[in-house]
Image (tube, rainbow, N blue to C red; front, side, top):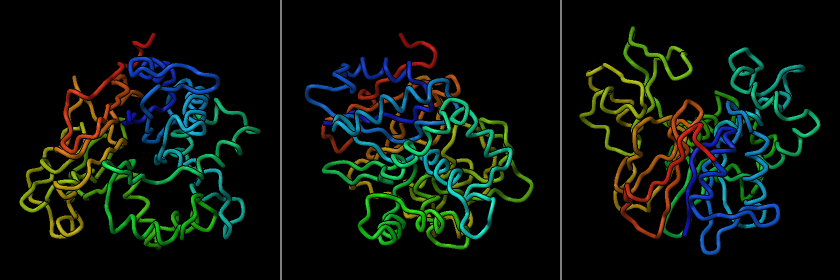
Length: 311
């Protein structure tokens, strides 16, 4: 059975405390459980105070077989940030614009330049999703059509190469759209003149959507998957409805992170969908779900550690 752990973002003390609550103990270089395995949902880096320590916990667990892990958008962003653009000398696949540098700054500050190459090689080895017996794991959105597109481009490779990165960072390439949705979720552009501020204070004109639910008859306000309130009761346009492809109720449970949710206690999003990102990097909590083989998820199986209350 598996313990699924959401976005960590450099909060190693909370991760250590959560692993202890889940019954994992240090054995050599890795944390181990006598009967269970962990699955990490990505976003190990950026934002937090102990990024290197988080990687020093997660990576040995994966390499020893005590855990599995998928890539988050922050690991993908790091790969693009540090990969030179082959057609634009002096530039990188992820531009070194102030916003991008600021998002990545905590990682740049905490990891020595001589160490970065080794971590980036490990990031390249992380799968973009896991389809296991009884459950599925992806950082932001499970869409079978887009996963097929990515899988076809990977062509059986377990490692992301430079060709894949260049195509996935080219906004004119359909692979860009596929990777963007899988790692960041589906979005719907708000009607003209309507915006909101996200948790980092950036003005946004698009909402993240509840891709797992039918979109027909929904309003922007009801279909938004985020903690920031959206006051827009207009009906969704046809293009958003057409792109929804809701996750079938009878499919295997799927676990995601990414969405910076906030609540006193975590709750499942649907009977077979759970988000495990409850904003530890913004004073929320680090969240896990103890999966015991059930096809219908249960709120009683969440386990959390509040930010700043580890130890």
